[in-house]
Image (cartoon, rainbow, N blue to C red; front, side):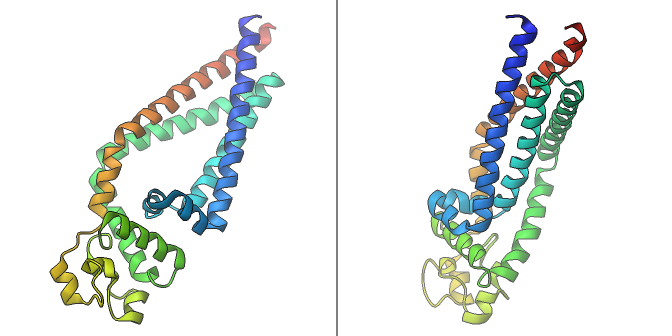
Length: 237
């Protein structure tokens, strides 16, 4: 078997795996979007922590769609020996690679800004949706119960929320499970916000995340190298 044929077969198999992975992520994303309650019940506190900052369902749908299209281009490009599909595959992977590198640099350089943006977006969400949206209320209740915390910063994050307006009290988690939980008891209880603990958990797993990201980058570089090799040697066949 020649080098060209071997790389062609590997390209087809590799991208077929990407297509299947993309389809799987699409299915999971649709499931999470349609039935987030089941997702929370199965994956517990980890999923509730993630859902604080991103809409997992839409993220998985977008990621799955990109992977499906990418794998399809790579698989068909190698199988049909199409220069057009191969260069499209190479270009998309290159764009994704550049975005990932840029995102990593920005994440390292602007961590404090990212934290400020998260705080500036989640607190208004709590004031608007906690006690009104069943999904967001359940997510935060799970998070506060597991991490023994209250709100993103403290109990004042719930002031003016639909829950507070209806019950005229704060969630019991803000008063060490004491009810009724009014402002005086919440202030005396001094239960910390969830943001520092969530940030700590993320930093603990930063090494794993970095390793996975580095592995993905290596695969992307290898995929681009193989695609360009096939592209350049098609005319020599």
